[in-house]
Image (cartoon, rainbow, N blue to C red; front, top):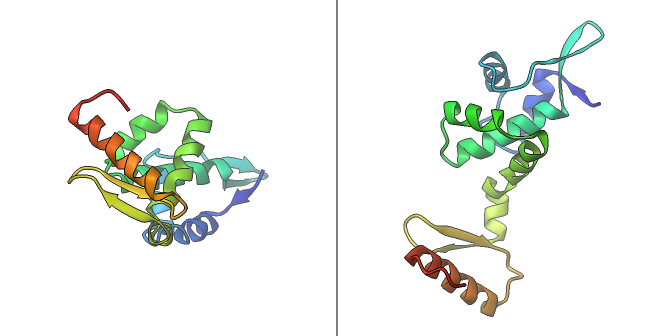
Length: 139
C-alpha cells in the first residue's frame, strides 16, 4: 500500500489540476469528502484510495457538480466506480483537449474525438448524436 503525506498527495494532483493544493486536500478531508485517513505506525496517512477519491472529486467538479452533490454521489459508488470516475480527469486536462478535436453539436453538447478517427466515423457520430438529441431512437 502506497502512503502519502497531504503535501505529497497535493503535489501529485497539482500536476493534473493546477487548482489543487494542500489546503484543498485538507479541506476535503475535514468536511468528510474523503475516507478516514489510514493509520500506519503512529501516523495518519493518505493512500492510493484517497488519491482516487480526489481525482473523482476533481472530475465531478469540473463537470459542474457542487461539493454537496459530489459527496452524495461518491457515497453511492463502489471503489471501482470511484477509480473509474477519477480516471476521467484526463479528459479535462488542457494537453488532452489540445491533442483532440472538439466538435460542437449544440450549445449543450460537445464531443472530443481522437485525431485517429476517420472522416466517415466523425460524420456518422455527429449524425447519431444529432438524432439522439432530436429524440429519434435509431442509431
